[in-house]
Length: 82
Image (cartoon, rainbow, N blue to C red):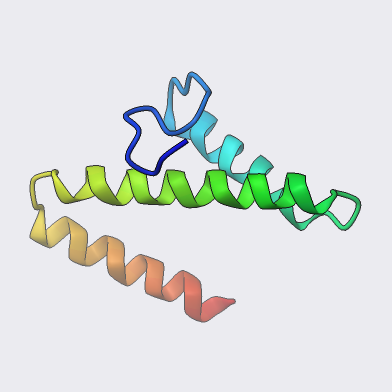
């Protein structure tokens, strides 16, 4: 599987909640100390491929300067609270 494949993951994602659950599942499996190295590596690779796919798609979207500034501020506050 290449980072540049049109469909980087083998799942039918219908909405953002389903996608978020799938991403969290991959991360949880990868972090689980009972998961073997091959499975952990595969999960991390899938997350990397998905990250690249999202970044590529995001670059093609229209800009919404005011809303994006607000989103970035909200995200920064979330990070600072951790």
